[in-house]
Length: 372
Image (cartoon, rainbow, N blue to C red; front, side, top):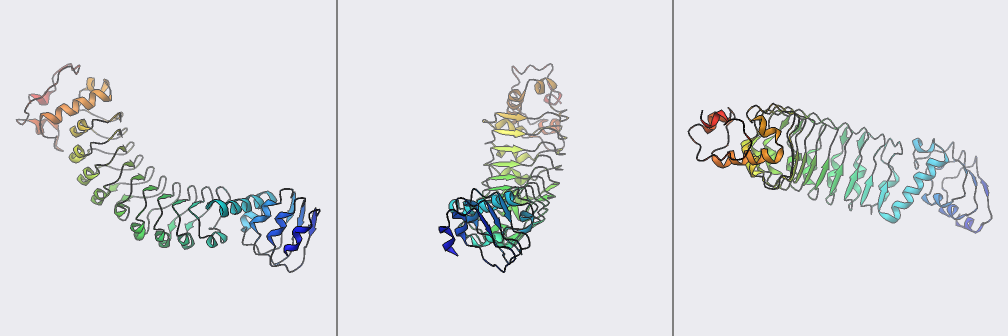
């Protein structure tokens, strides 16, 4: 019991082959304890305070039905056990449970008893699901479980009304529960390197999102519901399988960063002329022959990547001159007349151009659509 804390000179403690069901946290207050033998008892948990026994060099807990720490931690021996307990103990003080890189197979049972957590990080483990128990943290604002094997997210997670950041990259997810729309405070959602094939409901109903990361998936379709993400400022959709985007994409007027590189895009919606707050746009490695002239309206577009596209409708000298000249060129086309239709630039301008200024662009010849 607690009286053991008074044995300050104790260096060796053996209580093997008994029926102990409980180990007092006072054992962590023994400054000289070097060897602790608890083999073959009935212990289901070790107190987090055991990590405070900093002189401990030998710990034997074999033959106990331990659940905390879990078997995958206990089998690694003293060092891993004490590290696990140290992190549990720290979470009681910081309200942040950081159990990264512990080879965990399940969400820790003891964490279900901590109801004051604001942050949980379970990255680099072997979890296959985010279980219902994670939803029992009413104050949680930051949840990360990157680099696991997660295939499912329990709908109970969506009870976390104060959750601001949800990071689940490098897993095996292909869907989120419909109730994810109840995460009314969520601003950042990271689903990089999963198995999503569409961007539509329910993600597009999370109206509070400002940062969406869905790169390196299998996304081939973006639904018209994407227009409901009116607060979205950053969108990472690179390395997917997109061929088109819906016209509703133009409703994302708060976007400042957009990465669509390494897709299969053949066209971009004409509504792009509404997305004017962009300061970074990456269209590298697609199948674009023309760009929306509305890009020329982006007056704060300081980073614009467009290489590795078959931009046959844009003079090569304009492309070679760099992004600033290209943005200027597109802006002049936009000011001259209606944006090009999908069937191509020349037909859209024929008989409709009001005034087209191509001064000082270094053109070798006047583009044929001007007089076509």
